[in-house]
Amino acid sequence: MFRKRINYLKRVYQAYVSGKDSQLTFWHGTPEVNQEVEPGVLGQYYMPFLAKSGYSAHLDPNGIPLLDYHGTIGLQYNPIAIAQFGLGNYNLFQRTAESNYQEKFLLAADWLKDNLVVNEFGVPVWMHYFDFEYQEGLRSPWYSGLAQGQALSVLVRAYQLTQEQEYLEAAREGFAAFQLSVTEGGVITRDANDHLWIEEYIVSQPTHILNGFIWALWGVYDYYLATNSDEAKRVYEEGLNTIRENLDRYDTGFWSLYDLSELKLKMTASPFYHQLHIIQLRIVHQLTGESVFSEFANRWESYQRIPINRWKAFFEKLLFKVFYY
Image 1: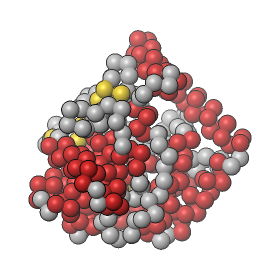
Image 2 (image 1 turned 180 degrees about the horizontal axis):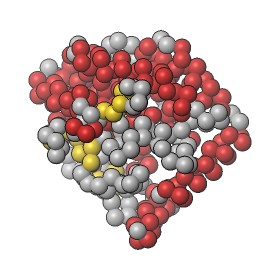
Image 3 (image 1 turned 30 degrees about the vertical axis):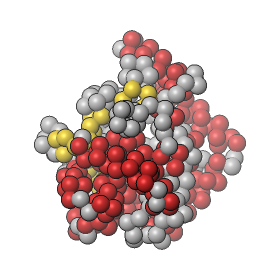
């Protein structure tokens, strides 16, 4: 346990403090709303991801991104990163019609199509082949509701662009995880109020990570737009209702929570994830027209303007990391 913690601290130092290239180079861009999105149409993706589209720090020989987690993890494929890389290039292709963006988008789509595997329950998923620190720890290989949703967003756009059935078939297989509970090899949990949740990380006690849930839900929405699936429509509408009914649980009165872990200390969102929550809620408002989402986005944005809130959020996040990581 001691060695594990030392290895984690070394890796965190290299990624967060040393200034070296790391997975954060990819993840921590500035969250933005894509103003060119037309609600109800399977067009450009909801966030621009333009910086991610040009990621070049580590690419494999085929041009697929690898993220550097440092320490004992090192360079790894991450299906979420590959999907976001693809979606950024899809947005650029739609804006410019330049073939190099289309080629990079289809590279990502092909990687996702070719790397869909079945888990121990026989459910098709996109795996991460490295251990990762979250709650009790994620052991390789592990899968994620977020990866499932982001991959769907890529694959249905690849099908729409090329009309090649293999992309649609991969999306159909990937959607199966949204029809099954985590105990059946899927990514869905239900709480005591029968709310449907999509879990970013599959751990023993569901944690309901907000940003991962919203991103995954957009993948279900995209699948519905592409297929008119009644089941996708049901999952999407139930998921929207869950967010609508539970946003107040993420509100601390001065900041937002990253998740709803049942721990003594709450996991306050970092400044990046707090801003991401705001942008995601603005997009959900854009897609639905429901004022509750813009109201929470406005409230959480107002929290950022108060310096003491930013400091309090920082120290709460730091304490959480000290005690639980």
